[in-house]
Every structure is written in C-alpha cells, then in structure tokens.
Image (tube, rainbow, N blue to C red):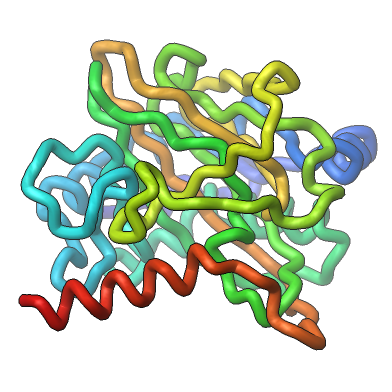
Length: 268
C-alpha cells in the first residue's frame, strides 16, 4: 500500500500555546485534525487486515481486552498490540509524525528523546464493550515514573454513543489509583478503578482523523459502542525517558495477573 502522498509538509499539524497550557493543566487535549482523510482510509485497510487475520494472536499481541485470555465467547473489546511490527510503514505516516512532534511539545521534551509505538482497539457495532475508567500507568512498570502520554485517533466518527474518549480533568496531578481487573478476574488483562467520580467526566467527541491526547495518569473511559458502525481507534503512546523509583510502586493487580497466567499455562 502506498501512503507516501500524505507525508507532504502541508499536512503538518501544530497547536497553540493556549492548547499546550490547557493540556498541562487538565491532562488532556482534543484537536479536530491530526491526519488526512486519505490517510484515514489507508489506515482503515491496514486496521481491518490486522483484526480480520487476528495478527499476533500466537504471540499474545491480539486478545480481548475485556475478556479472559483465549476465551471462546464473543470478543467485546479486541486489541492488537504493536501493529508497527507487522506494518513498519505506520511509523512513516502523517499521523505518526504529527503525533510524535505534538507529544514532544506537550511533554516539554526534545523530540529526539521521545519514543513510542501503538496499539489498536476495536469496538464492534452494537455490542463493543466499554473501556472502564483507568489510568494507563496502572498497566506499566512499577519501578519507574513515566513521562508519557497517549494519542487516540478514531478512524470512524467518535460520538458519545459510539464510545468516544471521556476524561476526568486534572486527574493526572494525583498518583495512580487502586485498580482491579475487569470482573475481578486476573485472567482479564483490562483494568478498572472504582476511585473515580464519573459526574466530573468530560466527553471528547471528535471526527475521524481528529485526536485526543491524554497524560498517562489521566483517568479516562470510553463507553460501549451502541451504533450500527464499528468504532476503530489507533492509539500511539509516546514518552520521554522515565525516572527510576527508589522503591517499586505497590500494584498487586499486576502480580495477580502474572500468577494467574502462569497457573493457566501449567494447567494446559
């Protein structure tokens, strides 16, 4: 697939100082455009291939985020990790380039030290499940303090009824909340925190080709897909070098998952 037409300098996206200040104060920012319509269509073709072929399933890169690993029921929140490993040209897109540059600016870091990669989450039409309230850092290495953010690109118009991003403003200023696994099942990779007041949520509906940025500690949520069309999202995570903690953070939900997966492998 040829996507080189979308790397023209005219497709560069910038943000204002006010937008940068808003992100640093509130932990999120939405913009209406980060790539072109042509590139969105190109990305949809790659996206559909990855999910139709369940790319990376044998390596654990394809799984249902909201269901137990290798379960036999309908997949309500399927995910593909590291799509750039299969399609390295994803790193040459207008989306990746703009996201990288804007992430560096929002993180107040030199672009040369900011690195990242992506994952894709699908919410099938009419039954795609919610992505519960959580903080991204709850999934990550407890030995470091990351300096990271995520860039959430919908390939379909993202309205509230389709599962657009929702956030709790300024929640990135607090520590990582207590999390548990969805359905209290450690074989489910997805996490949820109950330490949140959803009445404070701000919804971020955006068109296909727009983007929502959120800090790795920002509490965020995306509702179920109640529409007749799929909700396809391509997320990039960028970060500057993290700081090492003197003592690892206490995150027992990570230990529970490792032990549950080890026990499941022993029983097969």
